[in-house]
Length: 372
Image 1: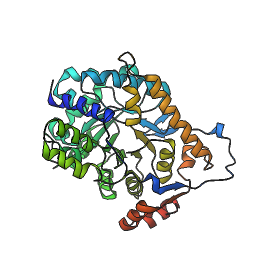
Image 2: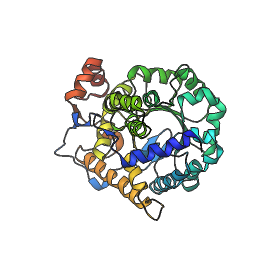
Image 3: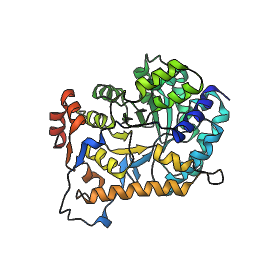
Image 4: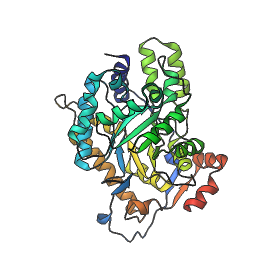
């Protein structure tokens, strides 16, 4: 078993069992304006969402979580069964381990096996584009018959890992090469430190089809590295994890505001601390086109159910979030997800201060008539 595969299961167990969530996504600074006379029937609210030419029953995806270790196969199977049952999208974890050793491919292939009709995206890190090239990208797409490819940016985590890949030279050029060569949509996703306006602009110019902000807030893989470092007696790694893991990065709210403020349209996925339907509603009112989450679905997927995990528990959690979203939409007078994108929202506190200092208040007011 390779180091990448071993690291995957270590990180997964840490995320499920340890405290790895940071409370910095700024959702508390965002308020949806209550509509006392909504004039709609809650039972008629439609959560259907269009994304990259695909239709979902919910504006929520199961974010990239896992794969690359034999024990992860059952987790991916449970998550994929939930996605197929509810007609929603799903991403797999980094497929680097499967490129390093074909024995890990099955932990990813199971997703398409049990979810033949779902939107599934493949996943590879930006540094691996230079290592494996277009051939590697095509291989991970073919591995799961993916509908799109996500290229993830996780340099914060890489900088803390003793074995991390910290050569970021040429990544943007590699992303552009993938966009030019691959016929499938290309999503670029951060993994916990957010994406700024300037980076989003470069990604759009490179030909990226969508941006997943992966903002600060929610699960921090950098924090997860603290536990790995401690177990291995790596004092420097533990120190770096504490120093950077808890508050380094651009929050999810900030990232949504900045990425959705581009003067040209590009779909934005809000990931990072999405825990309730209210978080989904706030994200979409700020400018997101879709939301995704990992940890809320990982924990029920890993519940002991004769060693199989609990598909029903994952489905129950997703439906709960959907019902929370419907209540938020009802109380803002929104019958559809498209109407929710026009809902009034008030931004206060730290989020407002950051938007003002970054120069996005007037831009957002002009673009969406939001209240900041």
